[in-house]
Image (cartoon, rainbow, N blue to C red; front, side, top):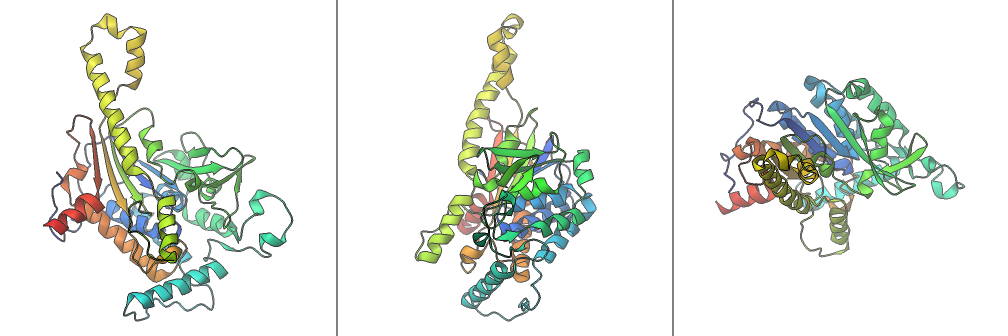
Length: 395
């Protein structure tokens, strides 16, 4: 059973490098909710838990590029610059960041106002309305079929991300996208591709808002259309390594039953874009139990049997590595509503950032999170929402 951290525990500076060969950071897609991931990363950085591999989808791909494309001491700064830039109100739109708010209804109205502003004017240096709208233009290149133009994002990424650094391979970097022509999922990885801004943009090209991104003659949409979480890509990677994986999700698969049409829309988005991490990790745990059993049996076999074709085939699947899968999920406040993924206000960005920071610090307060698992299958999973908050409620 998970132990409980000291109530109100905060970061106590850097921690010793955990006994894992690899630290992976996995970032889900979720638009404006992505500042939650930036806050979570800040807590990791303060603990000196710098990832060896960062993988993302959509807004998670952008955050991943900001992390992998900068030296450790500048990553939080670049994340902060990006999020402050895209949450600056368009010219003529009130900031409202310092407005006194006394209840959730007022907050909901302000959020809806800012979300409407995003729909009408876009987000600075990120995307802008396409004029004229695509419904009034003839059939043409898929790269022009969208309600918004995302060319401003390319300039912003290139100003904040050192793609030469990403391609140098100091940190492994992966972003997922969907091939429009084949419908297949594709990962752009710096071990197999020369990564540029277009690869990151392709991962976040969610239609019909954003256009398909062309890469080497192929068009790509948002990776979240097929899979919004890069966990499986990391777990299936060869060669296998002892892995401490932090997965930061922006949509919650679990939730309350909707009570009105607005909540129906909210719940639909949560289910559609949430990961199936618990099902995936249960399956992975079962497979690892088999792999470790195979490795143990192979070690006890006589040499002549180990050289048989059957044993050699078994050896390819055998695995003695261990895995910690640490899962953080953003749980939206009730006033955020269905526009939570495109409500790019500074106030809400700061709120998401702080929540991610606090959730990661709270998670790191559980000592077993950074310890190698001792279970027979070699897999430990931790979900703050279930193993952390619920335990505190019961205390």
